[in-house]
Image 1 (cartoon, helix red, strand yellow):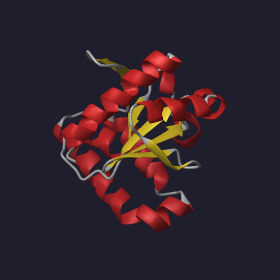
Image 2 (tube, one colour; image 1 turned 60 degrees about the vertical axis):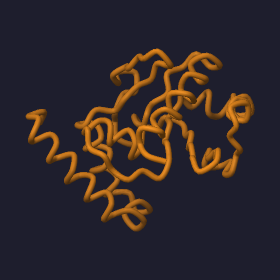
Image 3 (cartoon, helix red, strand yellow; image 1 turned 90 degrees about the vertical axis):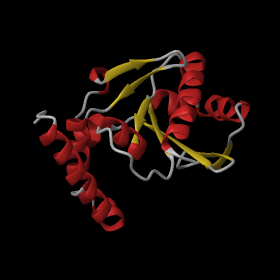
Image 4 (cartoon, one colour; image 1 turned 45 degrees about the horizontal axis):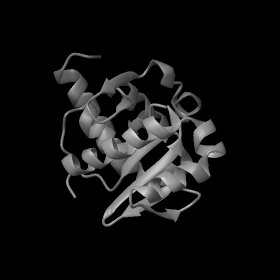
Length: 162
């Protein structure tokens, strides 16, 4: 599944989240980064952040919603769902805690399918720089995170957003 197809799945899930929970999900992870820096990159899944109160107190409702659109829960703790060869990971929004980014101030994107929030290239740079200080992530993804930082810095330099 290519990124364009994954983005369509994100729009489908985000639209359902908009309707069922009246919240704006955040397009996150590699797919979100590839959109932010306008660079095609390998993405393993679709990462979505939602408010903690929905992820925790309405988790059963969220599972039902995902089941209604053909996804099967494969990892309860990780919030991972599968449909065919497409994995969607739904996690609580921890951007403020993790990288001091106020989710309420993220850019809102609207299309004919949904409304959602996006992380800017500068914010992704902050997130990945912070990830280098995270022992678990550093051991698991250090080289990948360093590559992403280089891509973001290149994008920012070329687009004079620094």
